[in-house]
Length: 357
Image (cartoon, rainbow, N blue to C red; front, side):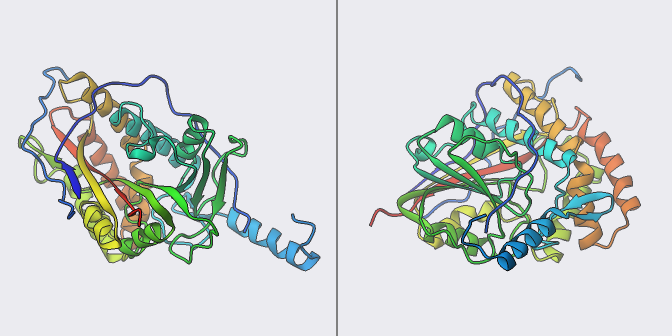
């Protein structure tokens, strides 16, 4: 059985700002696609070492550790070295700060909640895919001391001091999963363009969940939308989203797959699939207070990270130069701050359950 809620919006703010994180590493039923319900958002009228390990093996581990931490430099930004070239965003402090801003925008969207499936409480063993700075895993572990939370990422950029029930591992989840115990909750957020075969990762999630466990997925849809015609079809902002989508397709890691998540979950075997579509305004143009607040945060999230979000995509996928990409980012930044453009990014959210039997 599938529950599909076509469109909704955040109803309240949460206080505070998201903390910044740094570095650590790893030791070794038919779902309906979300559709726009035709609702519109009113624009504001104002413009505002284990001892058993031998010496040779220990030396190898140290060498592996060093190589993982020797990040690749590309166009003046640093990128992960494990499975180099797979992920399109940097892993430097500037990008990590953006990720924490994005995390706060997600919490605003869900009234402060970290997740929405039934495992928002009661989970015992949790996996955070693509944990990034680890902020979600840390906060979930803080709020649920009874849960064992593991965050996994290609980059060792998570903090060293974390809750005792939280740990981080450096790994490539496109390779074989080697965890010996299953999970009862797997969390997936902001993984657009990460995988050459997203369906296979969804299947791995299903296979590594215990019966009754949940997979929850959150992702944007990179092609920007506008309901009232105020976004010019030839503007730089719209052009950049089209170029990014084209570049990701050429790189074999498409960024336009989030609307297919419910079908992927169904194909993998999940049941009781719930799907929701949200709108993230590009800036503070909405009249409604909570959407305006979300727009403020989303502008901070994207505006400060434009170069990091697009440098690898356009230079790798479309063979643009760094200078060409930066010039386009400058034009896009003007569009992002224009409150006359009533545009937004669609955000797809869904979760599903592995059958009990």
